[in-house]
Image (tube, rainbow, N blue to C red):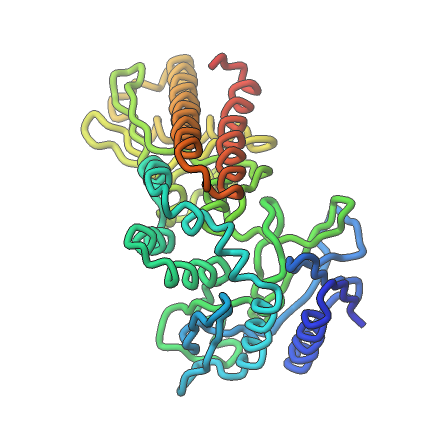
Length: 411
């Protein structure tokens, strides 16, 4: 019997029914799992402390509601409803969908989202969001949210950003294993009870077992809390803030924003600041596999310009990955054999790292000034947004300074 800790009895009932439905459809759970509801927050714990991956749960893809199957609407009192469409691709997930909606409404998820998500709390201060996005361009999903934000379409933004923060992309071939057919290459959907899992960089991501047609979670509980986490994606503090509404202060990376500067060789180095917006089409060679998330997928030489789509500032055990990536970038664009000399190459890499660190620190310090000015001009400035923006600036600046300190740089 899976243990459930709760504050709200209505939430308990919904969780119990959801578990029964999932088990009926073939889901499996580690008996040490604990489902937790506290203050409207849902999470999952496991009574095992281990440095290795431990099986937590498996949920059939047939249980996963697809967004294309539902008319999802905003109801009074900031609640949502989901009506199954005729000809739905995965109608077997409807009982799960209705129970998830009941949980969302029972824990006031939409009301909480309305008071914490930055694009909803900073409607009077669009200059702050625009300033960030000019430095760090966002992907398609956030671009769509920003369009609604700029148009003042609050209710549509509320609903779409809330659902968007929980959606997962399912590939066509994975669904085919589960006997679900779609004419599209992929479908957006929700994650059933896996939705309870919180994000933490370094944890395992969602895994689909191609033989069983189930999504599986293997957690590693290395802290005293015992909470089971998954890694939503390769994300830094700004991305989690704009996508999920929280600043991940423990993120071991920071994407650089836009920057352009002269190299010692006279070439111009350009960072487009796309932050994961471009997918790698050609696999890296074996010797570079460890740089898969760090080496930009877009590297090109344009006349006197060396252009990269993004640049990741790492930390911890991956500290050297930026230096390694820059060496590959520079040598790949070295048409005049300037950097065959190792000392010249090392000096250029140090120069680039310093320029990148200074550009990012300068941006976040300037943004801090803009934020303070906005707070002083608005006595009703959202308290959550105020605290989050301060934390965001501190996190990004601290990350850059920490990198500089570990490399022995003075900035």
